[in-house]
Structures are given as structure tokens and as C-alpha cells.
Length: 311
Length: 226
Image (cartoon, rainbow over all chains, first blue to last red):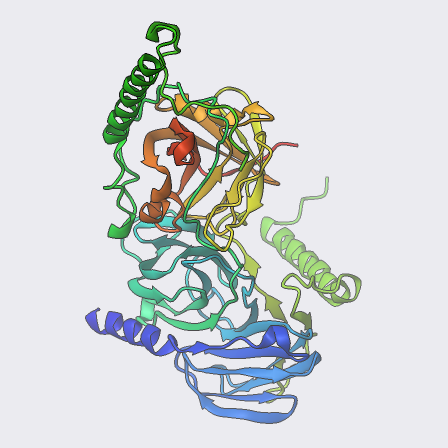
């Protein structure tokens, strides 16, 4: 079991090479061919031309830049003897993975599924993960940092989500179960502004479960992290007494997300202090002017005013 | 009376009929309904070949179906415990980092770098003006009076998700940078709503604090009923 986990880690580490995504700028389409059939050395031919021979499970070919239109792929050397032939049609600027993998049934001939690269721009501090079921297993759920985030993914299907960048633990479980993962938990490192495609491959019954992963860069969605919020100007809520309550959002794993510096009490004291100072100041001013008695003045901090600008 | 055919032979007939229909559908369907170009990029062409031992098996390259979770959507409105429904629009921050909250106090801004309805983790940050000199008090002034467990309903194009208030903090207005949990993609799924809070000191820029209400999902997102 240790060996398997080790090999999983190694597979993830070696797959963590980031390939830039040029698709958007190119008039061609891009495909990455993924060999996800355990125990087979496959020769890959595209449009009659041999591309690579003896491709082992876990190997990626590409990204290959192909002209828009239909292309014929032939995989020979797959279990069962007869080559697998399929045709994919590409649009200009598109990018996808073409995956040769096992069907859900143990004895079925390999099948080909295509997965569009989830290329849409992403916000700061986030990464995208795509988990694809290409294994000889019943439908699966995905646990992410101990919490089920995807449910009931069947062979040939996938789920994806934007998650915080950083280190995470991912496990695949038979749908509806909470223990004894089929795969993992695996440590997965997700760099900010990348998408990682993770293909679960193999068969848990013969110990061949593994993952194939590869990563592409994403563009930023242009959002800038907020540093300040300015949401009032008229002072109409100046006298509202605010009663803070309850605890921190406990799940933030990063120490930098600590709320340790929030000081509701200190702020209340500040309010009283400013108010008190204001009253003192008013008293001093009015007595100096020799005018009306202090009690005719509104007992408010001098700061209150209605002429502030709208921001 | 003629005896009914034995059970097994009926089954055989059924299977044969079923196979015939399937074969017909398989032969005709690709021409009638070309495989949907679900991914927008890869379409499929393929038919069954006549079987010889070295002939290739022709298979459809099936565009994988997305499943497992809802497709996240940006929030469109938030229903406050006061009964007011506040429209929400996506906002960014200015280059100096000031969140670009809508000028109209009746609207809230959602920081579009943050989490959407349906994202598995992280904060959905909504901010609106507490007041303005021209419009008076805004609906987000209600945040100053929020109590524990009050409910907020966030809606997007096709989803609803209900949240329950778990905390309210008064933070110094310029402390946002230090309090990354307010907008961060990390941590549990949460709704964080912000507006200005007293004390109000015009000489020092007006409101000195932010009130920050955090609410957690009561359940997963559900489809909106039209």
C-alpha cells in the first residue's frame, strides 16, 4: 500500500510540470493525448502519421497544435489486439485532452473521452482542479481537504471547481461512502492561477489505481484584492449602537487569515473616548465664547456632520 | 386455449427486439442527432466498422460530461432579514485597492475575485454603503443590528443558497488588508457582508469602522423555482 501511495505521489509530482496554454492566441486547436490504459504500450498515430510509439500509462503527448477540423487518431497495441480508431474535430483556439482509458466494465475495450481544458480566467489566490473518472470503478465521490465536494462522478465524467491555491488533500471514494478511499488521500499542490487536470485511472481490484495529472496556466480575471472599503458618508448611522457577537470563521487554515487584530471592545472604548473628548471640547469652546450654557448644545461628539461628500 | 410461450422464450424475443431497436437507433441516430458539441471544442465522428481481426475498432471520442457539483454562478441579490432584497452586482477594486462599491446605496457590490454561489470554499464578499447625503440610509444599515442566526438568502441566475449569521465584528476601516478572511478563497464557504459603522468622525474621513457580518450556509445551493 505504501508503494502505491508513493507511486501516486511521484506521478503527481512528475505531472506538475506546467505547460503554458497558447490556445487562445492560436488559430490552431490544441490537444493533449493522455494514455490512461494500465499495462499497455500504445502506438499513437494522428492523421496517418506516427506521433509516438510505446506510450505507457500516465504518459502525455502534447500539447499538439492541430489545424481546425477533423483529425483521426489511431491507438494500436491496446489490450484486445485490435487498434482503436477515433476522430475528433477541433475548433480554432480550443484546447482539450483526448484520453484513452478503460470503460467502467472490467472486460470492455478501451474508450476515448475528450475533456475541454477549463481555461476561463480565474481570481487571485485561486487554482482550478478538474477531476476525471477514467478508471474501472463504480461512480465516485471526491473528498477535498476532508470534505466531500463532488458527488457521483461516473466513468467518462468529470467535475471541476475553483479552490484556494496551495496544498490540498484529495481522495476518491465509492459514491455514498465516507471511509476506505479507492484512491488517496493524495497531497496535491495547486499553484495560483493554474488549472490541474487529474485523471483517475486503473482498477482498485488489481492494485493499478493511479492518477495522471497535468497543469496549464490560466489568465487572471483582472480582479484586484481589496485593501479597503469605504461605504458611508453621511453619518446617519453615527449613533447606532453596534453589538458584535460570536467567533471567527474557524476553517481558515492559513494563519494569515486570523482575525486576531479585530478589536470590537477597543473600538467601543474609542467611541466613548471620542464622545467624551467632544463634550469637553464643546464645553471649553462655549465657555470661552461666553455664550449660551453648555446644556443647550446637543450632547454629541463634535465630529457629527451632514455635509460630508459621497464616496 | 393456446399456451403462452414459455417465460424464457419470451425473454429471448424481447431481447432480440430490444437489440433490433438499439441497432436501428445506433445506425440512424448519428445522422439525425450529431453528438452535441458539449465542450464547444471537440465534436465526434464515428461509426461501427465491419469486424475483422486486424481492423481497427472505431469508437466515438465522447466529450466528457461535467457532473459532481453545480456550476457556480455570481450572486445577483441578497435577501436581508429585514425583508429587503438588495440587488448585487460584480465589482472589482480600484488600483489603490479600494473596493468599488456601487454609489447607489440600494445596491451591493460583490467582489468578483471571490467565491460564487456553488463554489465549494471561500468567501463571498458583499459590500454596500450604509448611507449617503443624497439617499439617506441604505438597506445595508441593517447589518449594524444583525443578531446571531438571522437568515440571508443569496440568489444567482439559477441558484439559491441560505446563510445563517454566525458572527459580527467591528473592524477598523483600514484593517481589511490584515483581515484576509473577509475576502479570501480559503476556508469554509461563507457569506461576508460589510458596511461602514460608527464612530463617525468627519475630520478623520467619516466612519471609522466597518461592520463585518459572517454567515455560513444552512445547506447546499438549490435550484431556483421560476
